[in-house]
Length: 165
View 1 (tube, one colour):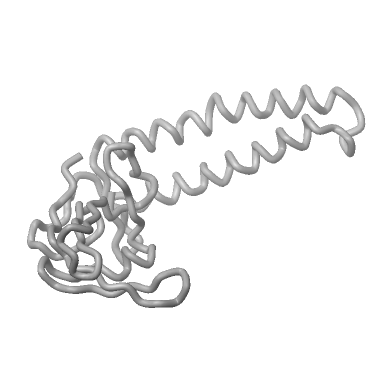
View 2 (view 1 turned 120 degrees about the horizontal axis):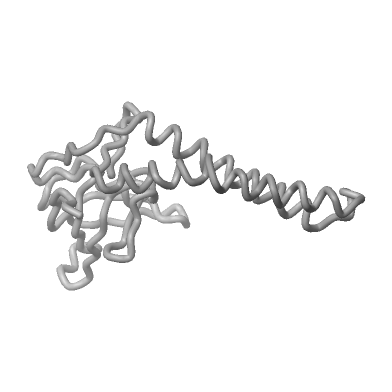
């Protein structure tokens, strides 16, 4: 999954299907389940002191936020278009960097939205400090990004290849 500046999100077919299935579950069975929890909690009486009711309403709010996020993501999705394999760092690529030019201190990560994070490979958002620092740089180039303490860090781009899943 990758994002561009036009808010288009590139997804593999597998990622698109997974997110679409999650959206269908959240807008169908999950909504019915949370509505039943809220109704059951209401029957217990005074809502001001009803912990079950407040917990169910909070869960409902989080669920509806996720529905909005998924809806927006899928509305702007383009399926099946990987980034170019031209050695330029872009969202949707697996990137290997060396910290401060030290070829032994490396990190390999997927530059993509957290929606596509997996246990297989570490994922960094294109909007993260490291992500924004390396985007647009070519293999062999140095890039700078800002650390949380405000200092700058330098990395060298060693590899940039489209993610194949």
